[in-house]
Length: 241
Image (cartoon, rainbow, N blue to C red; front, side):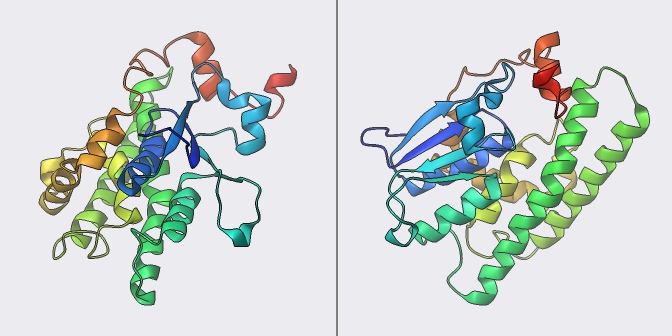
């Protein structure tokens, strides 16, 4: 990370969705300023951050030098998939130039955003954080993660990357596979996926991304009553009660 004369402000916390964008920024080698948002402390509900990310989630990004077609004002973005697609378009990297392949990449990006991420997140919650030990919920989301890993494994049987070349689709999926143990998944059951995982984890930019903000988050960050209320107990009227 090089924040000197930063092109981008990156609002981040060490989670799978945060790592997705961190990987992209490190792969691009652009200058960015890291702005940690402690989600266990409720900083995502700060009024200024909410103006950038109305869903009160990380990551978010502010491009301080957008393309001329977007005007001179900084470009704010939320939602990790949208951020990846925006950066790929701006820098014309990590997304195929061939139209058919480009749509393949976007499909796999949406697959992660709509499937692997939400199912992995629910597996994390019920296996690690839920106050009640609900066997049905743990089984439901663990089994669905297992199915989704199988989808990736089949896709990677005859190719090195999801879309033949290294793209934002790979970057989007990797951080969720990184948490395979949290999801109750034995990666060795999926040999092609395991080869892909090891290859990506060996990349220098990926290593830097996972090390980003090292020490920001501790394993017990989500264990306090306050943190659990912030992360798992919010309603539309929580801040008004």
